[in-house]
Length: 496
Image 1 (tube, rainbow, N blue to C red):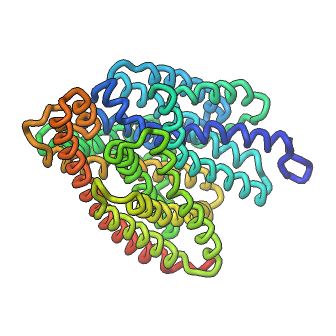
Image 2 (cartoon, rainbow, N blue to C red; image 1 turned 90 degrees about the horizontal axis):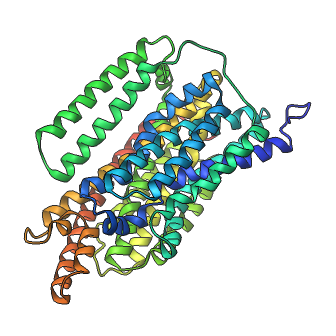
Image 3 (tube, rainbow, N blue to C red; image 1 turned 60 degrees about the vertical axis):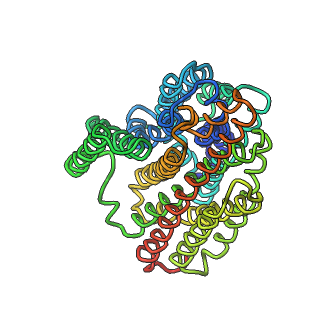
């Protein structure tokens, strides 16, 4: 319990340790399947579009529902929503682990995204409630942010270690005991909290938010992978139309899910924009790196995951460096420098070929991630500081949603660009599975004579790196635009 001076005691710190567990799982599940793609391709034989949905469905539903679920937790109780969400996450993890088809796995990933959105906002909101002392609260939120970033980094590594010894479904089972522990201990270590009622829950706004995100993402991905066709174009247009309706709803609702007036605060809107683009860069290229190590270089999942961990050394140095400079250098200069560094990393990726030394792709990936994470490390506090104190909860939820959406869009947009080039470059005489994905080509080659398999793999790996080059060029352009935006949006700020 808190002391008489308003400082948190042992129970609150134990409660924080408990809250960090589902936070870690939530972030880990973003990337835990990166090294499982070849195994899933062999077992479930997903199409290119299905493979992207397997990777993306979790994160898009998570992003689309974070704010509605945060508002719901204010009304029915944040601890109650945390317990319910962790129970649903454990159940969905079991379904995903034993999925026997691509569509079933996509559905299970969707359920995981919904469950994660149910308990995700409660973790940070309860941290705020449990630590009234500003210094203690800053330390607790720092621990929460650190675990979130660590989960995103360790997800592929955990997946690689498990895949070295077990089947791909084991990547989901690790969440089950964690969630059971949270469910059992939460009533004893975590307080319940309901915010004062400020109008009815905006159900219409919640429906409109998810009805905007999914159609837009489906349309972009399908058009990029399969080329022009009327149906995905119409779905994309419908999503944009619903998005316009959502904007109207947010302006007119008595208790809207998102307070749009926050975005009139230049620092707040700028920090949100920077966070979104930074996560786009960092997560968007991770999938290419993992597949390059496994399917092009031929490393097993454990070796590939350990090699992929090396760029995190640069990330840690970048976070420390950005933090040390934040009090002496203008934020605009730091943010612009971070994005330019990421642009340089993407440019280096455009020169990676199948027989490149690992030094080039791993160094490039490290530079991309260091620039992106460095920017995020100094904008998180800017979001909360720029918003009025009474809106800090909504500000944090919106920032978290933007980061999740940026991560998901990075995987979807860059992945779709790479997949489109892959399919265009593959010989039309190749088997259907080989023309669809590099994982399909590797699986097909295993059942062909050695000469034929060698020619197929060479063509598929060349096509994959060509797709990776296009994604890298897109990344360069996005990072250069982000550097300009950071300069324009943040140039009014002085060092903290």
